[in-house]
Length: 288
Image 1: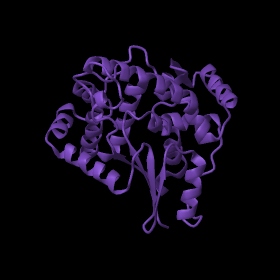
Image 2 (image 1 turned 90 degrees about the horizontal axis):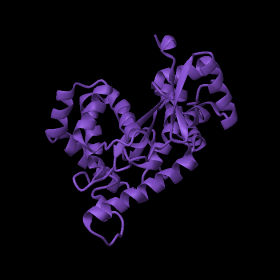
Image 3 (image 1 turned 45 degrees about the vertical axis):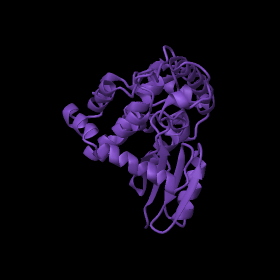
């Protein structure tokens, strides 16, 4: 059986890539090692001061750009369901005008330990979208790398030696070679065939492509929304948001909320408010 790999062309601060996290988690959870998910860093913002046509001083252009981004994030979150927090939002400054550092940091993490790199990417996204952290700062990136299980000195060395920058430059070349102009975009590939699709996608699209590229041989596991299965999902990914459960278990919003409230009442999971959603994690006693 030929394995399927899904490549997401992405940037750690792309709001619609954040919105597609539930779908990629569901693919990982439902297909396991039969379908791989990989990331190609595209570099969304080289210089925020030139991203929008704003006639003002450099500092004012960046201030207005941050305000535009915050509004766009809130509007996108209302559509895709992944939370954002824009209180005290100042992702970009004159000193930190680019998202390239986050892209390079992912490459550094991947060069050290590809298995942990996906966890690191998720932590960067969470810090960016739900904690209003300026994730282009190296001290923030080091902190997140340590949370993902990396040694701080090793990560910093890989980030600064040039290997990560070269890997990022290669990824950007891959984007250009494939005509990628927006994020997220995807290549879904088996050993013989590649299919490129652009934009935010639902899980059904990937089910169809995986079935097509495997001649129907690769199927998702059938797993219902039982308490134990939901807890398995949260344990696997450390945390979860309601929309992730909705996608993975094919639930309606009201069904998800009932299930979450039951698990909280049973002291199986805990939650904390995050923007227009809530972050779920295993109850300490359960986790221990």
